Picture 1 (cartoon, rainbow, N blue to C red):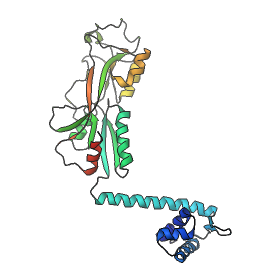
Picture 2 (tube, rainbow, N blue to C red; picture 1 turned 90 degrees about the vertical axis):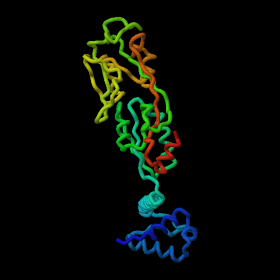
Picture 3 (cartoon, helix red, strand yellow; picture 1 turned 135 degrees about the vertical axis):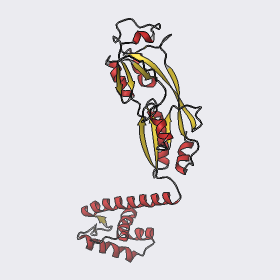
Picture 4 (spheres, rainbow, N blue to C red; picture 1 turned 45 degrees about the horizontal axis):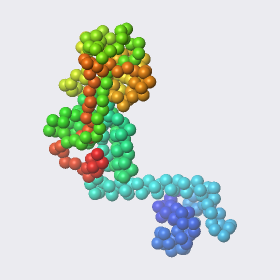
Length: 289
């Protein structure tokens, strides 16, 4: 079967414009040439595309089904042309973005959504990493941008402030056999299981994120699992406040923060390497932060 692009364009134009004459004008073709293209297409297919018994030609059931496929092909062709133009003028076809484990996802995705809407031909590859993982991805050249916390004094980073996240120590009611007060020491927590996040960095970072030595640990791969472990009274641990606001308000979780057991507030930033040459699309994304 030999279906030509001109035949598909003729069919789509006639259907969209409502008549052969209007379709011919759209294609800058003569009326007879469009009729010939449609006749040849019907002969090639072996079925009739249009019911010509009335004043206006309308698609047959077979014609409607075939036209749906034509529309998909033409849409894909236009997408391919746009992508080729995209490549020709030196715009990246994809960007690697890494979100950290305490990055508010909804806030980050709202920025990325604006980019995707404005530049649909640049694909966003979205990754989620814990602790030092996002930093390692960026410093190893695998990520174009991370949304995470960094060492702001490190000259390798270029960053823009995004938000602040409070991290607080919490337990579920009944986890500890003694009353909760603001005078609890870390030494009081020795022997009680602590839930910690698994660092996804291959080489690991240098910071100890509230992890007690000589204490039983449950290690998990993400903050949502950690939250459930704590809610089930299997462990205690530090959690980003935005993930547990409702549980603290309802009393399903209790803060351990006091005179001796502390939380922390971390700056979440959009960060990229300061020394690399930036592509056009990477720069446009950067300007959204």
